[in-house]
Amino acid sequence: MNSIFTKTLYSLLLFGPSLTIAQNRDLENRIAQTVREYGEIESANTVDIRSPMASTILSVATEGKTVKKGDTLVQLDAREVREKIEQQSMVVTTAKAELTQAQVILDSLKTEFNGKLAITEMAVEVANLGLRRFMAKDGELALRQKEIDLEIKFGKERLSQLQKTAEKAKSLNDSEEKTEELAKIAMAINEAEAKLSLTNAKKIFLNKHFQKEKLAALQLALSKAQNEKLIGIGNFEKQVKIQEANMLASKTALTIQQSKLDQLKEIAFNCNAASPIDGLVIYPAASAGRGARVSKIEVGAKVIDNQLIMKVADSKKLQMKVSVNQSRIRRIRVGQTAVIRVDAAGDLKLSGKVLQINTAPEPSVWLSNDVKRYSVIVSIENPPSFLRLGMTGVVEINAPAGED
Image (cartoon, rainbow, N blue to C red; front, top):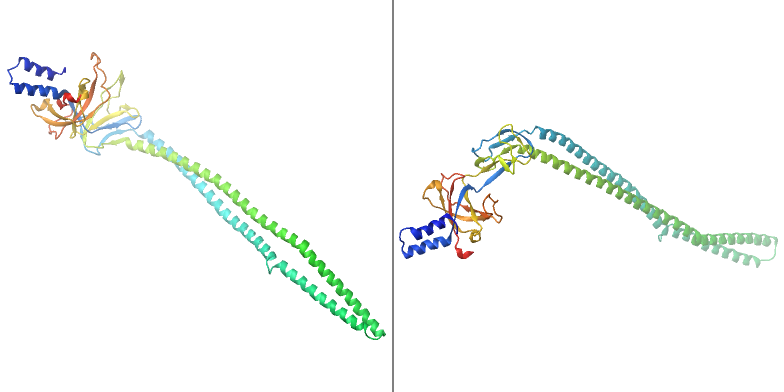
């Protein structure tokens, strides 16, 4: 234990006034249970204010100023970004028009298709009706077959009657009238036989040729109508897919361009930065390390994109930041209690707890023999109103050595 506190306690034990055994034990317990480090008061709630773009400062809150939430902290020259907003707005308008046009074309395709589909469906229905009309029980084919069957029936009956008449006429006595009558009957029989033969041929033609040809023609008409319907649907679906792809491309382009416009508007809005909290304005250090320089924060100064312009620190929520030697950091635990003595507050003792222990060491300091130290954050419970950021003091953390 190489802290000043430890050495002082040992000096008191060796060279100070005589202590009782109980007092010695109490002092030894304090040495064994306490990690004592020097630190500085900082805000527990600090917000960085950064430039949204490379620009020039038009106005800025002075360092150390107390601000309220919503107060303007800095105004940057936003003329360049406003010009970009106007240009990008035109691009977005064009993208919206292209999307609207793509939608109009798609709607037109659907309307046109619906009309053509209705026609092709009607053609299919007409072909179906024609086929059913021909093949139905009471359809065209059945009627023709009935007609022919009736013709055959009546033809056979007439022929039979004529044949009976001829037999009766033969039984009559021979005479000139008998001969004429038989000749007339023979001609009628020949005519009836010819008609019956023709009717039978019609029936054969109807069943063997006409039925097949008519049925094939009707089925072909139906297939053609159905095929035209399917081709129409296929062509429509292809055109719709192409147009939907165009719409998707237009939507994507609009989304991208709108996002760019929104980003530009956000940048323009952030050029007038308002304080997000009540607090104190703190400017960053002038040096950025390794010889780099940061522009001085003042009206007319140039800032780069994402440059830290200032911090706003909540002066009511305070904490202590201390640096603990690597030999004792393992004794520190989040939640351990601590006693805080601020230099400017005399003997006043404040209570606190360990909030955070950094896992990475602090940057090495020249001539430090490369001894690693780690930052520890300790809360300050009920801080008095006179405490200020940057005040220094001592923090005694209750960290027993047995917890190594």
